[in-house]
Length: 233
Image (tube, rainbow, N blue to C red):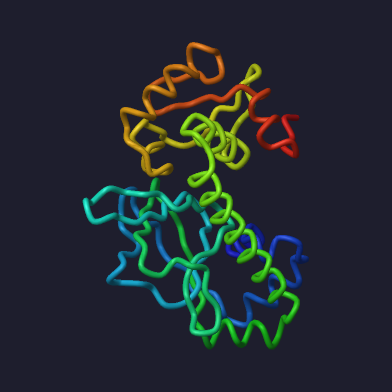
């Protein structure tokens, strides 16, 4: 039953009934892994994993390095998210580093298993397309922010996005459930740590954010301005 519960938490299966999920499990399309420890590299550009991978528990960070060795975070995956590459389908995770931000649990699906699932459950293909579309939109938003907006606006947009995805609302602020140093925020924005620290100090003075060691809280009013659809209840 625990295995079926984990399958139900994967985004492409989440609206299926328990009987449907049991049928998918019986197709033997999903291979289950053991826990991956924090800071383990799941993938490097030289060792791209073939197949699709699902995050059952934990958080993974996708990033690239520039010629100077500077990191640029492309995204953070959490429970229910998908990554990987097949000849017929790609989530754009080839040639990137994927690192466990905390102890994480994965399962995988090979190309023949994916094809078997599509034949037996064609409606799942639409879920894969939606997941891919969401990932592409995320990348598009990232590029737009990078190209058109000031660092302050980019910081606020990033914190709003992270709050919407990982935030816990407490006393008018969204506590982001991620270890966030100024360096990590800089990595996500392709900026210098010093520039990010200056912006964060200004935002803290204005009461827009609250900062403690590896912890950031964003005012709900700012979150609602940047992502109006967020529910704070």
